[in-house]
Image 1 (cartoon, rainbow, N blue to C red):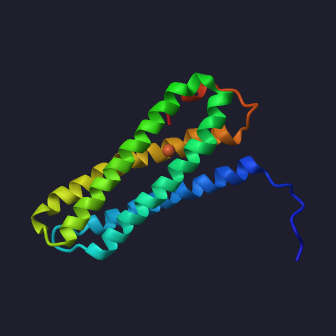
Image 2: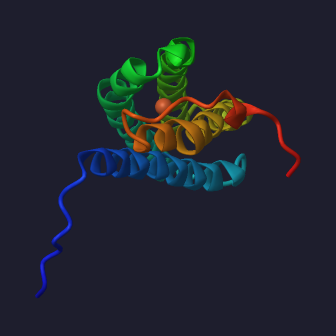
Length: 164
Ligand SMILES: [Fe+2]
């Protein structure tokens, strides 16, 4: 079997690992949303509990990789986006808090607190809105900037609104 002669590219390997974590979070959101769509009449509490736990651990791994690999690299190469990186760190904390709240709410529902079906559904959907927005920004802006490497230049024009 031929072995690839391409030299390893640490930046690409790290970016790919983080992109997989981002994709896993989107998939877990999609699966949780499907379960929540069945509220209040049906709700697979075991599946929801497991998905919420997995979302939290996947998110923690992703945040760790982003904050220990990507943010320091971007912070060195692009000091002009320090403020943006601080905001992204805050969003990570908010998303972790919201995921913990969702886990607690799903757990309470699974234990028989069925009067809160609407609240559980609302809480899960609120998490998705902010999390999906954050993941899209990570994928469309932060990862490509990191992939360009340390010699890349920040182009403010890339942020300008364009007609679709
Ligand atoms: Fe992030």
